[in-house]
Length: 102
Image 1: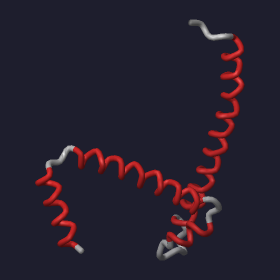
Image 2: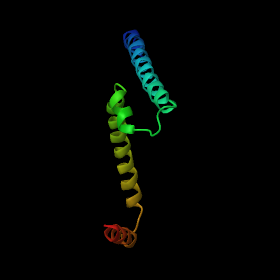
Image 3: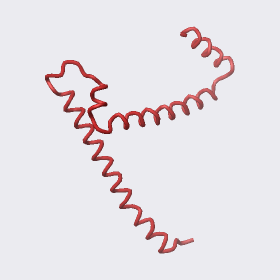
């Protein structure tokens, strides 16, 4: 069934907002990347201090925490999917290996 003109115009109106938001995020990420690269390329810096970079680069710590959380959730899902494919015997071996490391 063809869509109404009204529905199409609503979608078109939403696109510039999303584009502007993405451009803003790209600018923010570019700024953070530039700050990090400037720091690590400074010849006077003998040892790179990650906490200093996270603290001194506006928005970087928040971005990093969000990234880690998203990555953690993705990894959890991958592990759950992988565990579903293992036999009970294989799962027990993994559990024993984990216990041995603790």
